[in-house]
Image (cartoon, rainbow, N blue to C red; front, side, top):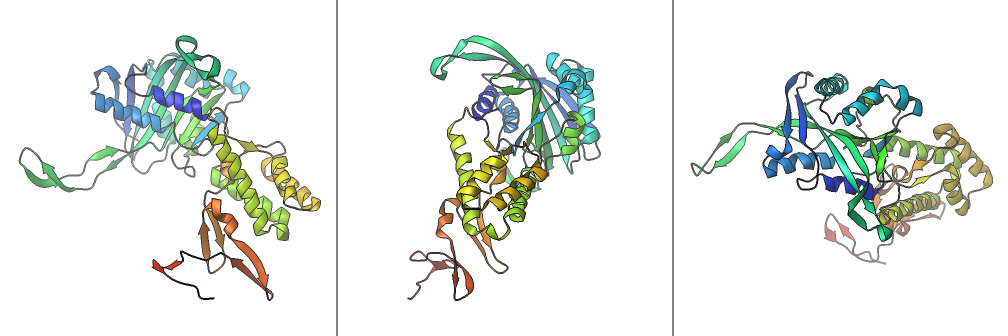
Length: 376
């Protein structure tokens, strides 16, 4: 799903534009016991309450593709034979009306999910008459060639508030308010099927993780039984290790800076084109950058061999997962943080046999907030 498709679905999730008959919920305690479950028609909800529910679902379609929004692809064999996929298809096709199937989904989530707090499972099913896009990407709202029926799940921690003094208008006084339980933003969720090329893709589900490093893969194993890509930070660490082991002393500051800068530019350019899929790179793309940096052929061959061993010969890596938005230079005693756009201000030099990191300091230098001057 590209950014436009994600945004198109997010816009559906408001009280005026959706076709959602009801919201289903299951409130679970830390022991995995169901405290309550419910079905609530949206039409019966107050406007503000309806908006709060839909805002929770919108958050499961937010974040960075590849990091927070993760494509989980089903093998074609699983689409035909897997009980996991059949269960998802049944929930979608019945519009969550099969109570037994819904309760089975709740039970599977509860049996797998490891949460340290109470949590709320929310479900909805929507049927979206996808407007036809004419020339110049102009939508024709009364012309639809596709009905996208999907289910969306959000799983939210439910956390206690702290006791506090609170104002009671009826008495015009402040009194102690006891702790209460409040639904927080979703930790995880999923969309099934994916909305690719503005149509249903039953070979893929999109899994949401608020924290890209705590993805609750125990849940995806139970619900999808399909492989998840490596977490973003693991991909970044592995990529950095491949560069270090292959290039060794040829991995200079200038080479590392150039690789990070060019990958970041690719990521930034893709954001300008909301129709584009999240950009990926192959080993040849990175090798081309390294070659332009003057890395010799022997090191390039070592890089490609290491890449194959770590990721696979045909692996395409998400660009967003191979860059760090902060640019940090670290020695055993000093850490320098600089905006990636200004990384060219840092230089390395060898002076009288000693290695130095140099930073221009002509003006605007302060120490602990105090402006100082550097005397020549």
